[in-house]
Length: 143
Image 1 (cartoon, rainbow, N blue to C red):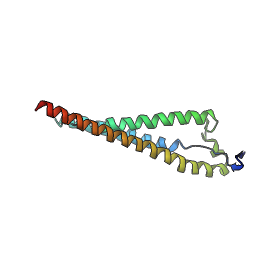
Image 2: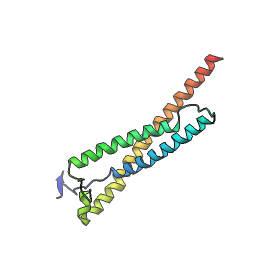
Image 3: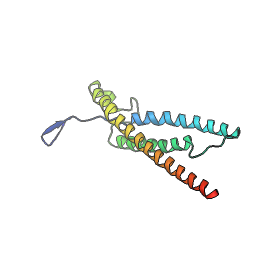
Image 4: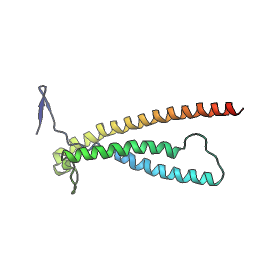
């Protein structure tokens, strides 16, 4: 049912936007696991890592993504937009609703994933900068 707000007719939106961050979270979790194995192999061969490991940095992104996905999935479940039986997304029951669902996934879902990843990238840059400053200070104190 359309909603009238401020004299503008708004379409009811069947949201599944959490699917984009969910896909990203699945991929980055797999990449994190691979990086952890490579870092352990490097340690076994005596290669020392300086600074923060990539697996640790990816764990930050994964926490952001999985936390957001869980909250959004709960919110969509609460509002009846997803259900625990197939096809899981209520918009999939009506082909007319699928277009608005896909539009929402592409626009809002992608926007959320880009925003979270950008925030994470800024966190990594700040952490790397602080690590370099601390490493330089430690090296200077040792000298």
